[in-house]
Structure formats: C-alpha cells, structure tokens
Length: 404
Image (tube, rainbow, N blue to C red; front, side, top):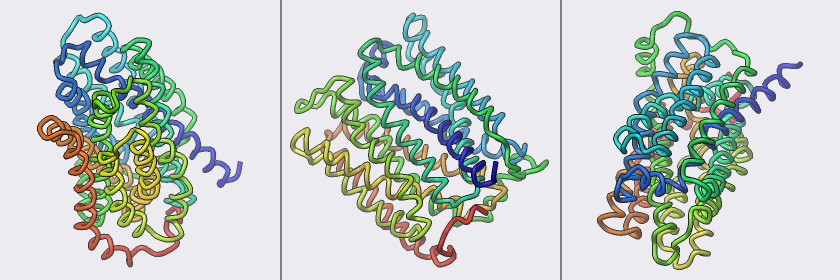
C-alpha cells in the first residue's frame, strides 16, 4: 500500500472513531428531559443543565491530560481504546441507575463525570491522530468535521426515536457504540508521534511557548458555546415552547437540520481553507454564525426556525474545520496531542458556558433573550479576537497544511 493510500485508509478509520463517539454522545440529547425526570431531578432546564454540564466539566478537566499523556508515551491508539471502554462502562452504569432507580440524581451525576472523563480521551486522541496524518491539515480536519457532523446529525434523530421506545435505550446504545470504538481503534497504526520520555508536566509547559494557539482556542470556545446552548436550551425550546411543543423524535429531526449540512459540508470547506487560508472562514464565518443563531430565536414559525437551523449548519461547516486546522498550523508537530487537548478544553468550557448561561437566561428572561445573547456573544468575541487572527495570518503561508 502506498503512503497516500495508507493515509487515506487511516483517515477513514480515525474519522469513523470520531463519528462513533459523537454519535453515542448526541443520542442522549433529544431525550434528556425524560432522563432527568426519571432520575428525579425536578426542573427540566436545571436538571438538564447539571446532567449535560457534568460531562463537559469532565471534558475540561481531562482533555489535556489524555493529550499530554499520549505525547509523553509516544502512542495514542491504546489510550483511545482505554477511553472508549471506560466510556462504555460509564454509559452502562448510568443505564442501570435510570432503569432500576437504585440511586438518585447525585449518583448519576458522579457517573456522568466518570463517563465524560473517559470519553474525552477517545474523542480527543482520535482527532489528534488525524492531525498526525499527511495530506493537508484542512483536509484532515475536514474529515474530523464530517465525522463530528454526521455523528451529531444521525445521533439526534435516532436518539429521539430510541427515547420514544424507552428513556434508557439511548444509554444502552451509546455504551454499545463505544465498545465498537474500542475494537475499531485496534485497526489504526501508530505513526511516530514523538514525546519520548518527557513527562506530562514538561509537555504541558512547552505549550506556553506557542501563544498563537490562544487564537483558535478562543474561536473554538465561542463556537462550542453556541453548541452547548442548542443542546440544552434549543432542545427545551422546541420541546416546551408553546408554539412548537415537539416530541423527542420530532425535536431530533429539527436538530438534524443543523447537523446534516454541518456534517456534509465540512470536508469541502476544510479543503477550501487549505487554498484560501483560515482568516475568512474563521473570522467572517463566526460573525455570520452568531447572526444565524439569533435568527433561530427570532423565527416566528417552525418552518422559519428550521431554515435558520439549516443556515447555522452551513455557516458552522464553513468555519469549524478551519478553526481546528489552525491548531495544527501553529502547534509543534510533536506537541499536537497537548495542543488538541487544549483546544478541546476551551471548546468544552464553551459548551459548558453555553449550557449554564443559556439555561440561566432562558429560565430568568425567556428563550428569545437567551437566543439573542448567545448569538451576540458569538459575534462580540469574534470581533474582539479578529485583530489577533489578522496579526498571525501573515505568518501562515498559503497553501496551508503540507502535512508537516
């Protein structure tokens, strides 16, 4: 097999791992109101906020630990398997708690933290192995973006259908999918990631010498903030708002209006960013994204809201792979595990902020204000960070991503 064919095969395998992890995660989103009700959490918004926030809090705490450990070990695939199996156990134990009622909401949150701590290892390191591949950073991150988008696009409607069968069914399905992830990761060869005998502390310390990483980290933060907002507030909005009052299955389909274009367009948009650079997709795309998010809350009918969700997906696909590729552009080749771990920390913090801030705003001021603030924050942070992005852009030559 030629090097190009081997890279293509590995790109497909690793993208499949990313897809499966996101698919398992999003299976729970349309039916989280039923899950928190079964666990006795009380309010859907407050209970859902803590249920989703527990997982992403663990993402924040452990993303860089997995990445730095892989750089120090010089291997990633065994850690992907460990994270996948640990996540499967976490989902399985959550299913037992929900089905049996043997423990309350507090125990479920502890299990959710443990499941998130394991799952982020499989997710982040699969993306890092994509970063290690030759063939263009935009193309590799476009493959990751398609996997993320397809996983979420399919996970939302299928999770809604499974919730209609039984609220526990998405948890069981998620655990089974992560078992498959562990098996799939055995097919991916290592590619010499470096790191040698360096310890985790030294690996993390070296990233202080690459301040340009803060640029994609900032954009990743605000992009994922809106994603967290949609996971909690968007789901509750379409399910509980008087003008919509959709069931779990219908809500999953509405969410898929965003995730489908977000998935299908990421690879071509990622390749496009290799040709035109990162400035327009990252900076300009973020402003358009914020406007589209606000448009969902302003939409007077379900049809208009669905069209706005579709627009959010298209614009998100334009900017997401370029933002991830920017991490690869500026990170040292043998520190990409830690760099992507840092990106996932900022992204998880954004997702967590979207859940907490969005839930608080929707509860206190209503859905319209929550949507306007979420979209406005996307635009404001993009405008503030844009001069810094322009400042580092001349240091990045076009075409980007020669695979080094």
